[in-house]
Image 1 (tube, helix red, strand yellow):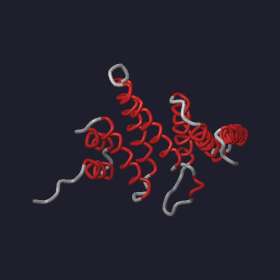
Image 2: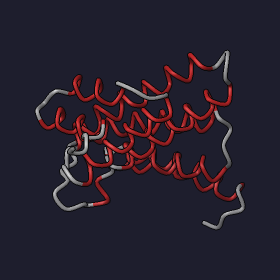
Image 3: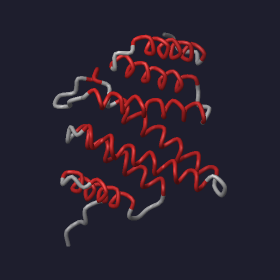
Image 4: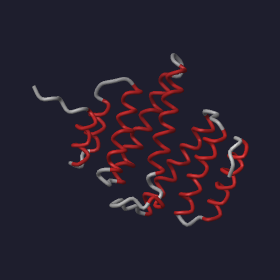
Length: 179
């Protein structure tokens, strides 16, 4: 009996056919919030690294973040630990998808359009907001601030970038890290 394709493999087929809604349905078909969130993270990684599909990565990354934050909100009253895990996972997904929109990586075959930088910046700011909300360590705040700065710089906003880089440096020093 042949192995059944995983939900991520099925979703990838939908993405490649231009059916993002079908991809979301595959990812969300069965499983708990953590499992489904992990599927989104896996798929966005494949879309970027293997398929070189930045637009698809952004669309499904955003869908995964929205899914996790919605599930976290639903869980908040009954299971604060689960809500925290889901918000933390949403923060990580937002950061990773945003980081992939930084053109400085110069990954072979990946084309970063100006709109991708703007979308990535929006996700980087969301990730930064979640770092603040979750009251994570200064090192996490430094890294999230740096990414906002890097994307602002890539978008041609050097003043905004410098403000974020200054914040990243300050947070790094507060966390005991050398700059």
